[in-house]
Image (cartoon, rainbow, N blue to C red; front, top):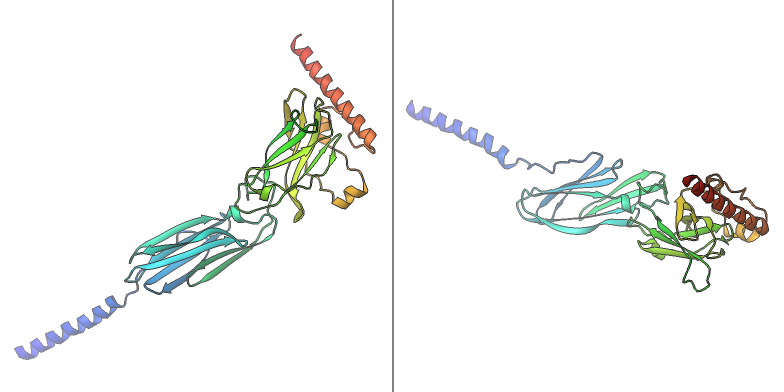
Length: 320
């Protein structure tokens, strides 16, 4: 009886071992934990070790989140790159992950979005997979708090030291994004009927426009400058600034409404003069929508007289 009982006990222990061991040996390791909200795609590489990964695109935050984990038994490499609108925003870094090690990376793509387009594509590539996340969004190119685009950092009037003896307007253009734009500037004052078709150097930080004006260096100069897409994106508006520059070197600036940019053909067929409702209201000037060059210059003289009169009136009230 003891022999039969011993055999039954041994058989029972053996069955328990076989019931537990296979479950432990074949259990799948925990994969990467997704910590970003949005459209998520997953994949796996299994070259030297098994690397599982999850790629998430969050459109509201405009960022790509990548999580990768080594769920194998050997060291393994994980490589990925991120592009937006065919512009690389994350280079293909290679990292080595030890068994159980996890990588988390968040990449903001705002600086690489092409602000001149409405249809956009996020591209994420690993060693094994390629993921596309497409979206449609019309970008406000004049919103400096949104997608980075070229804008005027500062504007000055250079009155002395010019070769021609006439003043020049110097505009410093900044582009804080990583995408290259080729903007052009349009300049108009009461006496300068100018459309400057010049490129800022690749739209990079430190780009400068310098345009000669027709006013005398001792004159009060009133005008508007506009920065737009130019030859490649003529309907794209980047920035605008109206200004009044006084003979003593001081000046004021404000942002007017960005009107439509005339084409080169329109400029050839008709004379385009400075028009600015804000200037007329702010500086009590005349109707500055002249129909001839003579009328345009007369308008400029009247605005200068109005400015001088306003300054005289302010000083008189101050010393009463």
